[in-house]
Length: 178
Ligand code: FES
Image 1 (cartoon, rainbow, N blue to C red):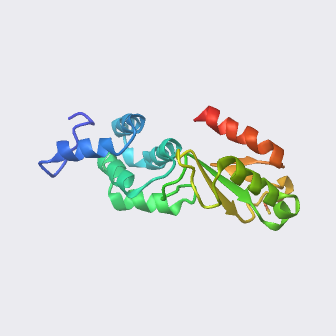
Image 2 (image 1 turned 90 degrees about the vertical axis):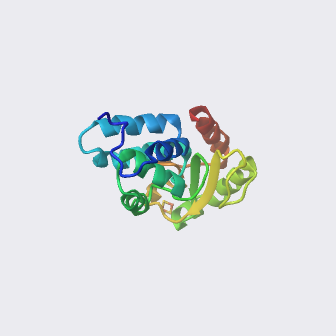
């Protein structure tokens, strides 16, 4: 049996598979297929979720079910892993999550002005996502790198000593990556 022929207990596996594939970008489906070809496909779960989040920007309920079906892992396990690690977002958000630290060290070094500049450039408030689904903006408390204040995190990347004048370049860098 090939890895794409899921050993399934239901007669409607083709429909389930098609629905799962439709819930995920093609590249993720292909990646899951590669993972399934390996021994211990389950051990690839975090890697699959990382790729999914990097592509879609978040991991929703529909995606959790789809990953579970295609990888052959219980949905509860996928959901458990996605909720356990803080770097996975379960809520719909932009491809790039911008977190401006407003902890004390960052605040005294001008983080509020950096936040205002992001709001102005993106035309959104903190807690919102741009209409094109590209950027979400949020405020965070101390990110643990006070020596680099003011600090902005974009997805998992830390940007140090950010000034309002750097905001446009940071957004451009994201757009170039997208
Ligand atoms: S206060 Fe911003 S990193 Fe600590």
